[in-house]
Image (cartoon, rainbow, N blue to C red; front, top):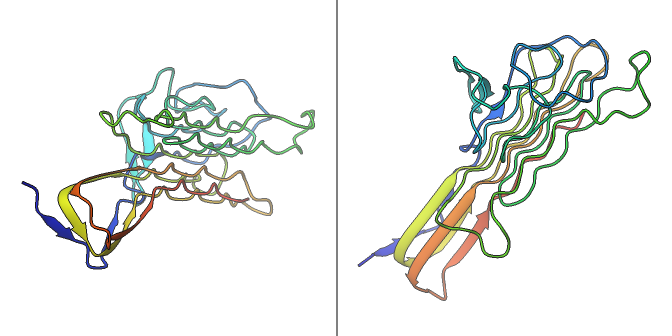
Length: 236
């Protein structure tokens, strides 16, 4: 028999502890490029995708450190605006924004690149594609609980632009809950892009994670505040 959990005003926080965002070094820009959906990480025309259920890119940011693997880790390569699974796409050259990660909802589309490049069209949809939704509504499949997808990278900032990290997974399985508590599994926000006099495209936000609560006996006095929100994309 499960016991009683007394929340007693404490907070459970798995924010930005989920799937990681794509990351890479500064890449110089050559022109507006729309059609790059998946290329290796050393390709100069785009930047890193986010981590998701479809795989792990070569270079990532975990919220504290840069992480580099030995292999590309995603179908067709770790860079490009295409979004594999709930990980999002990176912004293409020239200076487009990264997409947002997906989980309970779709991520956001990365902003278009600059229009000031010579011979460029007036609009250019080269921002990172949004991460895909992983839970069907209104009845999600609780047998497969998923972390929030990582946000997107963009090229040509001072040292690369970091996207947001997805929210983690929180499981609560008890007989009874008493007291008040806050449970957080939010994604973190994308970083802004700053280089010289003109800011570059910004990183996409990480998706919210998943919170699963199973209680045998309901307590009418318990108050839970549960947040699993996606992070905002950076505003350049």
